[in-house]
Length: 115
Image (cartoon, rainbow, N blue to C red; front, top):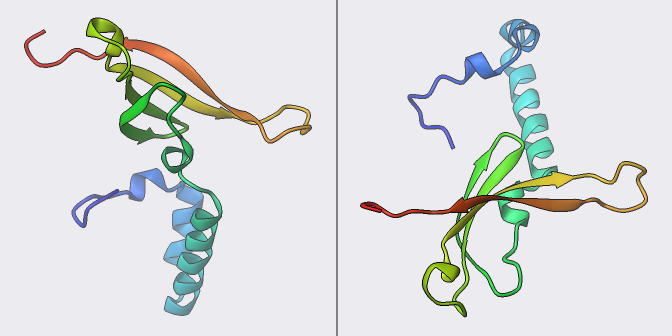
């Protein structure tokens, strides 16, 4: 989430900025409403990720196109309990036969301060 002091204009394509700069207040409000509807139609990847069997989510961190997920395995002991980091990406089904799936890519054990 961006704060009030964050300038995100650089993230907006120049062509879109040019069009928006020429919009009236009424048109800008309509654009904002449209963008909010689009965002509402696409759930955050972070919100869609659920813990796998035997794991508990410690934290998730949204990035553009993927999410970093840190999990622990409470039934395990020692180093086998984690925490472990994964990069999770949604991969749609190529032929459209199914909805696609989440791919978990193991990044490694998460080390605490002083390790």
